[in-house]
Length: 67
Image (cartoon, rainbow, N blue to C red):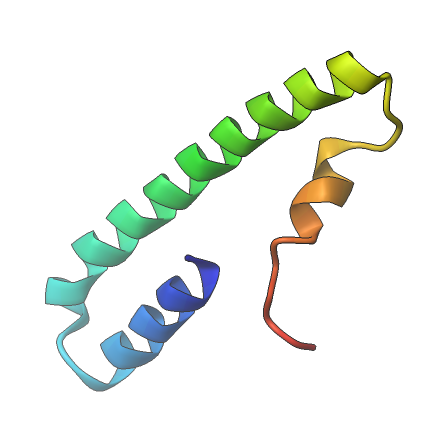
């Protein structure tokens, strides 16, 4: 989802960003909702197995963009 949002911003640079912006904003909101659901699942898993770490560390593993 993160990569798709980045691609949409790139497209918006070359076209009418006024038309694309609402789609990008909706995708960003969906990404935030997705993160909240993932965090809830992560917390449930950590509770079940007394695990270590933070959700932010776990969430970073979902950034698939190569650096």
